[in-house]
Structures are given as C-alpha cells and as structure tokens.
Image (cartoon, rainbow, N blue to C red; front, side, top):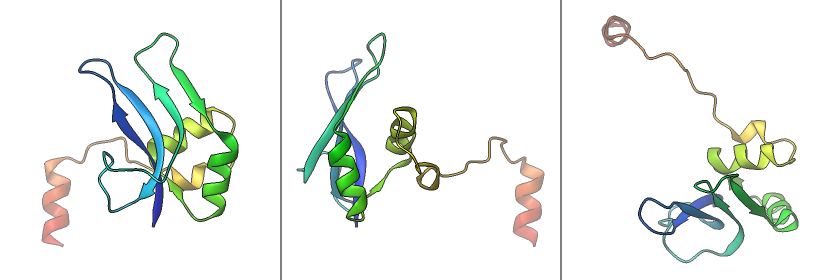
Amino acid sequence: MLVIRLSRIGKKEQPSFRIVVQEKTLSPKRNALDIVGFYHPARTPKLVSINKEGIEKWIKNGAMPSDSVASLLKKHGFSNMDKFIAVRDKQKKSTKDAAAAKAA
C-alpha cells in the first residue's frame, strides 16, 4: 500500500520535511517513489510547497495521505481530506475508566 507522508530532513533543532510517496512498510528515511513537496515549520511564516498535480495523481492511484499530510493539504485547498484525518479523543481516560474497561 502506498502512503503520502512526511520524511524529516534538516539539521538538529531545524526541522524540515519532504512530502514523499512510498510503500507504507518502508522506513521514511528510505528511497521514496516520488517527492511531491516540502514543509519547513521552523520558518516564520511556515513554508509549504506542494505539487498539486502530483498529489492528485497519487491519490487517484490509491495512495493514502497520513494524518499530518492530510491536515496540511486541507489547509492548502485540497477537498475531501477529512476522510483521511483520524478522529482523536481529546480527553484523557482516567484510571477508573481504564480499570472498569478491563473488568468488563
């Protein structure tokens, strides 16, 4: 299965990321099939460059963006990215709830 994910590059304390397409089972540091953009969160303002045609082509061919990439793409005008963003519970479970779940 193909996935569109962030691959970290850059020096210590200066994060930079490539947006890459690669096999899900491979490490993000391994060779990618395609580099479709980059993201520099440490700059002010944050710098994002996305190859829109490349992303659309890979999604059409079955690649799934990760949560982080899907939220970046949503901010930059891509539609239908909500189905790729996982819903998270923002409240931590208390230890009483965890114990009750184990007992059940």
